[in-house]
Image: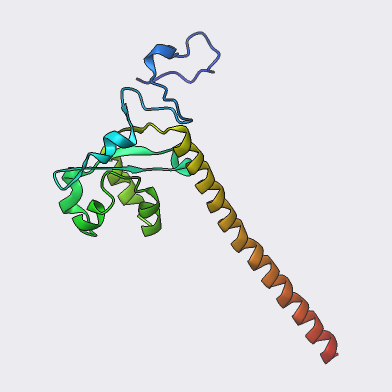
Length: 162
């Protein structure tokens, strides 16, 4: 539905009753009407005819469950690479490959629900996110140091040539 441009505090602004949303026990809000799946449930879907996987992390909205059974034959990298991570958390594999924006859009078609994480999985995801952030910041620090060293060397060279 289309709503008029009004402020959210205005009485005419549409509201959603809390019972109409499905909120999971992990820090991500589920899409309305989608189911939560445990790793135990997901792990049972690990064959060519029944292939599910978990893709998502803290940076992109959280872990989601996809039934990619009907996409296996269409995958540009072949079905085998996807079957290797079937029934598992395939996020690191998916991100390491460097999938395009189009591939990410295609993936949305196969979304079936959210991954219901236990406390250990939440802690692991947070630790992985922190580790990735540290890796990313380390590279920019190294570049800064390298630029500073080049500037110092250039300054020294200029003073010796004068």
